[in-house]
Image 1: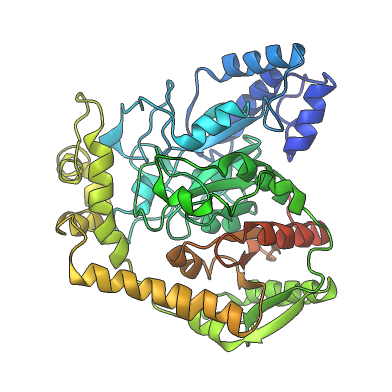
Image 2: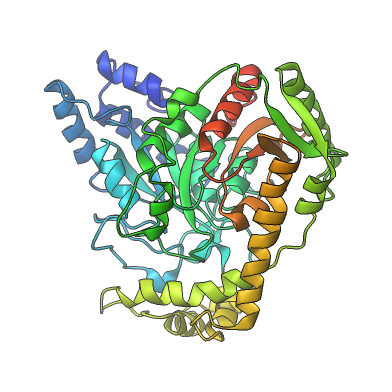
Length: 486
């Protein structure tokens, strides 16, 4: 393994497993290879800045998995595979969990998040934490994507400093795109997985609320929050989801999925997945915010899906749904009680144990953040009662559910006898996020200037199996993803 920096480029999980099984390399060597790439491309060279910190135990974990393998023990497809966690996910090791905030610097979680425990049990090597938009970009609406006062700015590996890196899971997206790990975990509230997946030309899967436990994740809005895989292929995303989807008695939302999930999502990786499927598209296949070059990409890919056997149904109501003015009222009200509950449990030595503490800390100790961007959303949330009894919140939440579910995705799917909806790029992320329904995005090619483009499939509640089938069929037929030229 002389050339550390090229041996893992674009490698998928199945291929990495084969290499370890035939002793071409060990999990330790695989982990060192990714660490070498982080040194070469994340903290020097193009300086992607996607990694917040490395796990000092990563090499030891990899050695333990190698020892198990040599004894004939395999924990599954993630055995010995290095993966990254977003910096708002608790891990009970020598890595901090800060959500990119200086106010949470020094916070070492006492327990693993439920999904981290599942990853450990599956044999994954927890390589490190990824940088992210601070507090999942819930500081002010004016703050740029990828900025955190703890970690600085994440940069898009396809054009560092020129192209947008996407929403709050941008560190996970950029790291996966640059082959700094086999896969990563992102979190989603309102586009935080789908948006950076599109911008970094990778696969992002936003699961239904309840399919994946949120316990141990710094919250934003409980009725929106979830976590999901970010990978370079649909197959790798399905492998990751198989591990992440599990009932958690300490997260009531997972009760909903007890009879809705599957023990193995890779069984839905079917190349003929479009046969007989009805997919809804906007009647004019256009969205008002979509640049012309990206519009041309989407129109081309719609024709590809027709050729693959899909019945592409033009539906006016989809365009109306996506043109809907979605507000952030539910997030503003839900954030305060959720973050207060999380912060109240932190170690006494930390400076913040409430939202009010965090706001005051930023005013006193983070002048760069305050002077450049402010913290209007934090302040607006602190001004709420924290009880969720305000009529404005209740009306906003009921409106969101009505427009996104009963009069939105559910109605469109039912009225037009559709299996799924198609959205260009991340234009359509709000509706499924508000509904708590799944979506998956896949690379759809690049513009002439090299900007990644993507398409997103949206389904009804717990329709991940169908979305994986469609995404895999499309991916295998087109193979648009290509590595950034680092």
